[in-house]
Structures are given as structure tokens and as C-alpha cells.
Image (cartoon, rainbow, N blue to C red; front, top):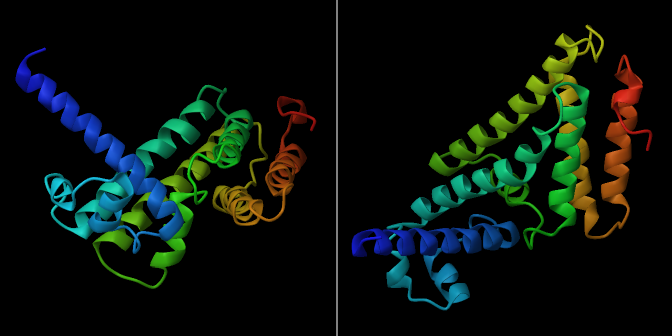
Length: 209
């Protein structure tokens, strides 16, 4: 590796480490609480050093959204796609989401949940990007429901948008209650499992409990 390549690699590792910290901080304090100054204080680095990567709070916020999106894709979406298409993949996506929460991967639970609540009613580049990422997630859920219908694993009269909403709502409720109610993650798993088993043309494709 040349000297230039080495510097670039170190710079990318530093950027990744900073964005890991930014996503963790925003999961607690929201995107409003994410600033170059607060991030520098948490990382024990100079604020001026962070300006080499992001010149404004908005740039940092947008970078944190993309980093959190990539993290979600790796930790939540990726494992589910190891399962067969249809109801098994749909349920696996719900399970991997709950596993992400149960592992306390982020101190605040979920970057996107707090960012979404915080951005309600707001306009601008950051809320617009958050809305796009949320739309991607809902579209993915709807697509998996549609695939299950096409495979004959869910009834043809299943409404993908509605079932996707139910699955997502169970995940949101689990996150909100998990800090105070120990069984909320399991309850969210069982609720979606019962719903899918009740709809599935072959319930044995899914776990019994």
C-alpha cells in the first residue's frame, strides 16, 4: 500500500468511527442534538478536525442518516434475505429487527425512530431524506408481502400496504415499550407470528411459537 493509499484508508476508518459515534449519539439525543461540537466532545477530538469531513451540522446529519441506513441494511435486512422468499423472509425481517433492538446495538434503541418523531411536521433537506429512507423500508415490507402472495403463501386478497403497516407497527411498539416492559420484544414477535400463521396458506412454513 502506498503512502497515499494508507492515508486514505486511515481517513476512511476515522470517518466510519466518527459516524458510528454520530449514529449512537443521535439515537439518544436526536438529530437536533447531533452537532460537530457535541460529537467532538464525545470522541475527545478537536472540533476543527471534524470540519475536514463535514462543514456544517446539516452535512453531518445527512451523513449520519446514510450511515444508519447502511447499518440497518447490514444488521436487519441482510440476515432476513438469507431466508427463502415469501412469508419466511417477511417474518425473518421482523425477527432480525427485534434482534437488533434486543442487542442494544444503539444506546437509544433506534436512530430512525427518534429521528422520525423529532422531524414530524418539519420541512427541509434532512426531514426529506428521512422520509425517503422510511419510504424505502415500508416499500420493502410491502414487496415481501407481495412476493408471499405471488408465491401462494398468503391469500390473494391480502393488502400488502395494510399488512406491512401491521408488521412495522409491531416493531415500533416493541421499541417504545422495551425499556420499561421486559416482554415487549417477545410480545411483538408473537403478535406478528400469530398474524402471519393465521393468514398463511401453509402455517407450517413458520415457527409454531
